[in-house]
Amino acid sequence: MRKRWIRYSLLLLLVPIAIASGLKLFDDRGYVFISFVIVALASMAFLFYYEKNEVKTRTLVVMAVLVALSVVGRFLFAAVPGFKPVTAIVVIAAIFFGSEMGFLVGALSALISNIYFGQGPWTPFQMFAWGMIGFMAGLPVVRKYLRNNKIILGLYGIFAGIVYSLLMDIWTVMALDGEFNFRRYMAAVGLSLPFMMTYAVSNVIFLLLVMKPIGEKLERLKVKYGL
Image 1 (spheres, rainbow, N blue to C red):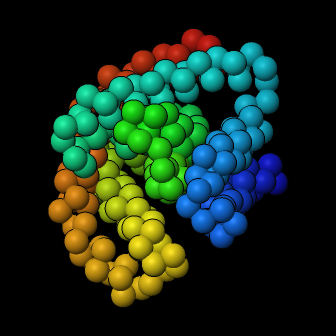
Image 2 (cartoon, rainbow, N blue to C red):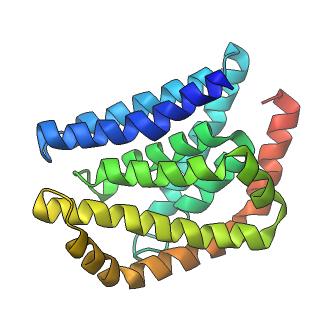
């Protein structure tokens, strides 16, 4: 339990602090540094969880494949704004391998795919948004229901779409004002509703389509290699 809270504090406390500190110290010019700090903190939480070297190496390979699937999926649907399989892959990673894996797959998916889509001060916010979606999906009390109940899985897809949009709207406001303005934030939320709805629907579609085929393969890997 003590180790779990150490891992969770790295993700829930230090990552937001890193983002806020980076914005304060570097304005919008330190996003590369902030991005790599997020990856470092998420990796520490991941490595704390997987202590055995053999298991760690095999799990890292699985994580790399999941990140690659997520990134490629974002590329393939680049022409359709808000309609992406990234959240589905991140959630599935979390369901089968826990919160640390979910956060890291989400954060790396944003960082790596933005090599194509464009890096910028929005990158740390995307990393944190997708990372938190994965983190919450991997919590023990949540993951068992997501794995066994399609209705709850679909509802989580809607929830994830809303959370992602709300978190990214924070960046929108801070990019405009240099600080958080609640009235402007509510205006940004209102303007982003079409994107939020599209993203929520796409999450449900992709989760219901890929959960079974990818989940079955991940389960076989877990049993075969003791992951």
